[in-house]
Image (cartoon, rainbow, N blue to C red; front, side):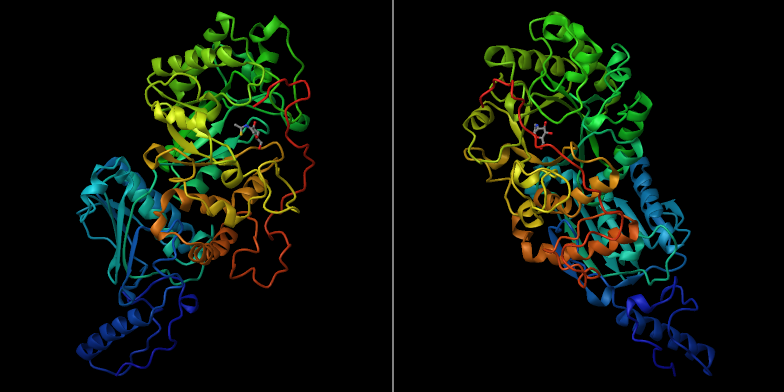
Length: 591
Ligand code: TNX
């Protein structure tokens, strides 16, 4: 007779590794004094019983962003055995996702997790490239069905199926969230690695889901940027927009105009040393992102926000006089001379080199707050730059100020208004433009959470987690049909942000809120459900050493006892002095 289980198997009381399928020393059952056949029977019965008793700490639906469909099978929980292996369809991109999964799980589990191609040996974690049947006909014709995945968990293992490596990658991120929070630890942890049983079928609601990092106002290292990419990937965001140039600094080396970086890159807000990315640095960022199925969208902001370029090349400045370097936080005063042909050589050279380094389809040309280039001078400039981008075979993206310029194939406007009524943008959409929505009062990650937030701005209002979550991209702008909305992007401007900890403090927990707005169908979204699901991510971020804002809106399991206004235990952001953004007094622009 098997003895009774020594414990009722709460997941966190379990062994370091091993589980029912290995029958290792840590199953929690003791079998004594029985014949071999009976022992075998007893052993397998004990294994079955333990599987039934194994309670995962995470529910199958506890995923952010909310999946399209979740069918739990509580009797089918899976515990990762010591000999767990990853098996994957023989395809280089899928193989890379499998390696990524193993890399994610090895540090905390301490398991070897070898990766091999299917079908040699069935593994416990299987990644299969195949149609995610059954798939609706409607989904099949939507371009974003490409990112769909299906995840099946039963007592024998986990199977992720997708039509593309990107779909497999999203499935891996879901699996990561279904494991105990300790999986985020970078060192080996004593834990039972149980995954809740059942099936998830999931796909994004919008194809473009992104965040922007302003590396111009303050410079951030390649490692910092890569860490931001990790945060995006975790929440199934698939675009990183890099704001590479602004008045305070030029951050990308351009061979044909070398002083842009070597002179224009040496400044930043507040007088710090600045910096820039070499081509190799930038390639590293792009490659790191690509491996996480994130596309980099480079922005060269034109014709305004160009003081750093003018310092480096006075020939681009109106009057050909170099302005002094600028390290303040005002906007709208600088511009490249739209009447000089040399300016268009500059634009073509810079965009050509940036395009050559960038595998993705998008080139962002800025276009915001060019207060001193007005009317036809402005639209004429934008139209020429749009043609340069088209000539490079890329799709142009610009801040919504470029709306009055002529339509060019595929053009995308990034809308950052705070009022959902914008007739000029609605008209550009009628002429064929598509939109990325970054409403300043919902998606701007540089806004403060609350009046006492130690960094950030408030010109677009305060954005707590609820405000970041509570809006619908499909209906947000009057006169813009849902089909014109490509997706959502959360910009992080960095006038007040000087370190990775500060970036993370502003990103988390609002980035997952915006990720859910972009990924999850409205029918699967609810604030009540979201705040409960998000709560489980606090321990994950803590385990990974990630800074976040412990917003009192979220019922954090391990932070509950803390007074509301305390900062996170991990690297609290320092308070920074910040002058409110406003057009310079000498700006004569009226919007
Ligand atoms: C507006 S939004 C800007 C940026 C500032 C930001 C600060 C947009 C396209 N331009 O230049 O950094 O406000 O929140």
